[in-house]
Image 1 (cartoon, rainbow, N blue to C red):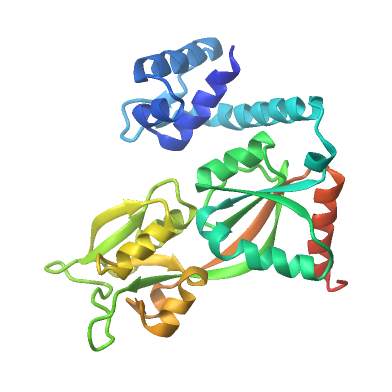
Image 2 (cartoon, rainbow, N blue to C red; image 1 turned 90 degrees about the vertical axis):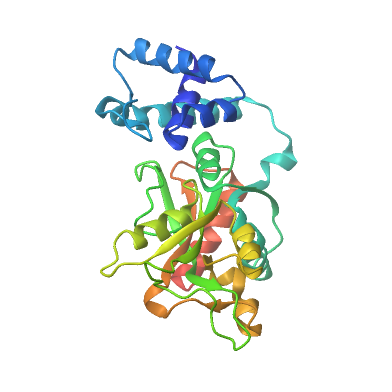
Length: 304
């Protein structure tokens, strides 16, 4: 059994598409498919239902998934611990955060913490949501910062990971206003004139929260999905140019709402409250990272 087979397996779990995973793993689809087949032969069970569209895990695949994640995480962590690292690296607090929070929330949040303590050596890797999760699982970062909603399955076993709420946000459906200040795209739309909808890709945490809300409405909503991206900043630019409606974090559009550059496309029943959470492994982190976490706990308990 090869380590890359486990990496291939988890990539396919995320994308649910052989072609996209092959591209992400820098190989051809036939070669990627052979490696997945080799893993299934090694295990002695089929891990994916290939008749479904998109493909999905079989019961055997569901059972094997947390094992693969734990094995890879421990291997990568063991590899990192075996390496000799410089003192600077050892004292650097490493974060992985989604693109939207990297641009809007993280700088102010970190500055506030450091203003009440001291300046930390930090590194921030800005990635897609799925890549942030993988970074934490592999031990490539100490902390992961992400929007969180109860409907989002992060696939971070609570036996191995914990988290803390460090902020709150709201996903607001917004659009360009017309000359009278009214939204040019208005929810819920009609069957004859559906709302132009700018959607998140399936790898987006925010997108999963929005799609869950849309599929659990009591009344019909009429949307015409005209654009897809995993970046909230891209959807914001598209909405600002009049391309359609997008659910965007209030933290990233506050000024636009104040100035009227964007307006809500519906009332507060369409708003989605979300948390901003910081995730970490339960096992001990380097001293500087643990110091950072303790500062957050002191703030939460009111002893700061």
